Image (cartoon, rainbow, N blue to C red):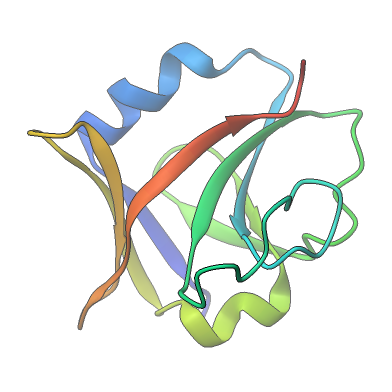
Length: 118
């Protein structure tokens, strides 16, 4: 069964202004591996970011595509150990943070949007 990520309407509204037609979206496990992971496991906790790149930028470390209800999202295949089969990305309204969760738990309560296109 393929992994699935459901974007809530509020999450889409929060992310959509950052996208252009040639944007590729990565759900990046921030482990210090690859050109778009700058911090690594400094705090020894699971941390994900939505990394925005252009469709001409390298994404060779992101070898798995998640099925979603919105845009294609790519992940590092080995980050599967932290991801559930049925995930959601929602907006926490009070702090306007993105929350990644699966059926049983919150995976990351503060998924940051990182624009690498600049």
